[in-house]
Image 1 (cartoon, one colour):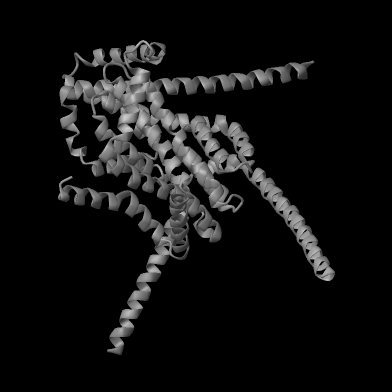
Image 2 (cartoon, rainbow over the protein chains, first blue to last red):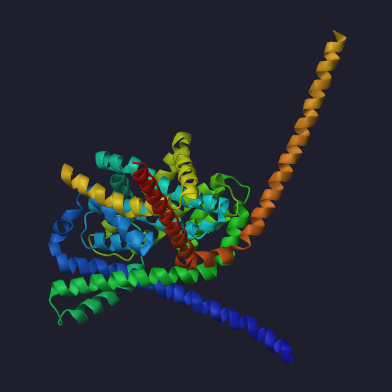
Length: 388
Length: 87
């Protein structure tokens, strides 16, 4: 009888823990939304109508890409950087300047799984496979920028398509789903209280800057904790998804990579998981390739979520930049993975780099410093010199 | 003529037999690989830990890169010394 009572209390204890954890997830998501709204309001307060001039230095698209790349490589979370970008757009940063930054965030995020692959450095063939699986994502994202940045600069196709959808979702028409957005009413009172509490204490520029700083810290902390918590909570579900995708071809890999990233809210986690799976030799490079690409699509959910927290006339632009991120990643997969010639470029590049690095590990160091820090710096200097 | 037809039929039968065996082997291989993949997926928790401790993993890497760089400079220095003494 006593044992029975004990066994009854155990599931209730577990469910209480699960409830607490999910409640924490909800609080962290709420903090993320508050943080995005805070950055938007802070930027508006600090810059007023001068937001465009403040970011004039990033008008050069190469600079924008480099800012996105380096910021993401340092923070190691593209979701964090894109959420900050959404907040800045909400505060007046022009979408045209933000687009290269979002593209750069895609490149910067690839550093995490490359670092994870370096953990296999003593294992010879295992290291080669792990390193290939990590750098295929890098080469895919670099190729994406090489193809889509010039196209975007020439045609504005991403900005235009995203503007079409964002107006549809966030515009002032009767068909708008704006009225269904319950996020703004629960987020903005907190931001308003924060702003009005700081208002009498300091000048408006300082208030704005303080709000931006607090917002950035809150985003980094909330996404960081969210990622860690979701990893624990979702590991069982992740296993289920992966088990289901085994032996089902590239499309299933792509979908499971997307779903897994949505669940853990981190593309770095998804792409880093692939590294040991490929390193063991159980999954081939061609099998993990589409799974990695799914992470690019799944990670867009965070910026979309962030955009729901933005109110005011710039909310449509905040949604636009989040949609640019999504369209860019979907188009990248469709075009590069869809065309066999292009599909093989990241594969071959990753294989060759891994072959060279196995024989000489210094290449790995040169590659990371070069791709993520040195080449971006040189590109900025050259593009400024050419007067872009 | 009859012999040629019979020979051809025999070859066709052998090819069919080989193709069937090949398909069975391919199927067996696919099943074994998939089983291995399922087993590996069951270790996902451990791989997640590896992601968390990524900076710890870099210790070995720095050690190896340092060693390779020292070796490289030593080789270069030795080659220069050899060249100097040769002159």
